[in-house]
Length: 139
Image 1: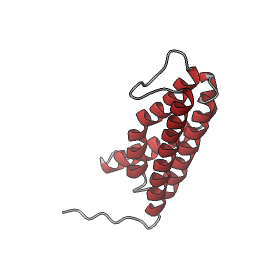
Image 2: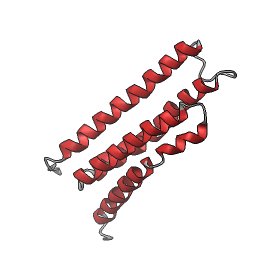
Image 3: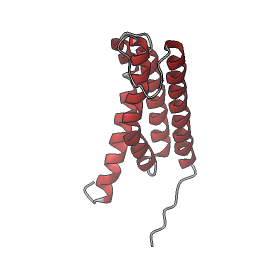
Image 4: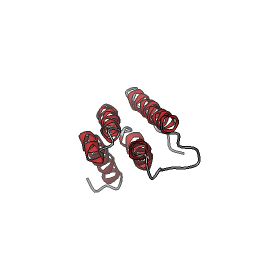
C-alpha cells in the first residue's frame, strides 16, 4: 500500500478547484438569466432567433467541455507543484470568465479576449507532463 503525503500548500490547489466550481455555477446562472430574458424554454439548448442567448449558452457549454481536463491537470500537477498549479488554475478560471463575457456581447469573436486562459492550461499541462515523465524515470 502506497502512502501519499500532501504538502500543506496542496490546500491552495483544493481552493482553486472549489473556486472553479463557483465559476461554473456563475456561468450556469447566466444561462438561466438569459433563458428567462429571451423566453427560451427547456429543454431547448439553442434558438434560431436569439443569437445572444446562443452565445451565453455556448460560453457555458464550452467551459463544461474543457472542465474535466482542467481538473485532472490541476489536481495531479498540484501534487508536485501546488503553488504553480494553483496560480495557473486561477489564470484559467479568470480567462474563462473573460471568455464568457466576451461571448456574451453577441459577437463570438470577442470571446478571444479570454485567450490568456491557455497560459494557465498549458502551464498545468507542462507541470503534469513533467511529473508523469519523472514517475516513468524518463527525467
